[in-house]
Length: 428
Image (cartoon, rainbow, N blue to C red; front, side):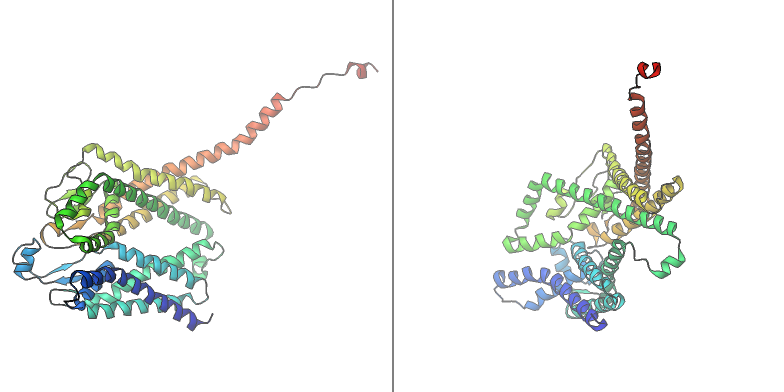
């Protein structure tokens, strides 16, 4: 394929990504407009709502200016000054990153990876800017100046991830600048640290998702009661469910911070952490039914989960180091990999914690999410300790396997019967 074809295909896929993300929010709202409101109101209101939800999910802030009656109807203080909504529903962002990674991997398979990446990012940023222009309203509207750079940065993260995955899968492909700047041993240690940190964080996110699923199952009756109290109807309940699904990744990352130890904030002085209780009443959102009103001090035992995730990643990483050419299995190499994993893993955890938090409204919902630096520091320590144990276990296992053939050969020699002397041959 030529450079122009690669750029055109990447731009086309970027448009498809934007259309799907926007359509997921627009489809249920259009049904509400057609069935519940019988098309009596302007469809532009629902278009702006879908555009706002999509842009918020990508990380674009939104300005809110409510009058007194509207603020009281939403349960907010009467004279609310204009405020900014900064929290993002990460379901939209994660979908965008996954689609961007898919485009990045396809572009990396061609000689024109840079052209494809620039074309896709520019097209997606332009689409987000155009949508932001159509979503302006007096009460609620996205920040137009943030639409192109923030949405483009979210999509670019997926592009970079896809290119990195393709390069990591191709062991023979090493950029010339990287090969000249760093030696083979440095690249092996840094690469192993990045893989180990990514694997440990992925295991921790999976454990957090399982934890959230168990909480949803345990508090299912309470969530149903909140749905019934809201009286949203079938279409309104479906729309509310889709909106909560967009914030489900946020809940997973908050649960991850809870497992690490620092917990997360829910505004108004409410902090959710092992051994603490809520200091404020939460809004009647069904997803918040999983938040416990109090957790015992014994819940701090949950910090063993990040340690186990680091240990599992360290054990698997040691096998890769052992099989590399030449093998990197010295104590210094293992210490460097453990330290590098702690640094990279802590940085990734801090980024996820920062990404999942923000402000939704004044008052109770003013500060939502975990502390980025606390999650990063404590997570780095726990993952680093687990990684050290995993690497040490793999190293000791490798040494034991090296001695096993020698011990087996020695036992065979000792059990071999000694031949009896032939007296007849001696006599002759």
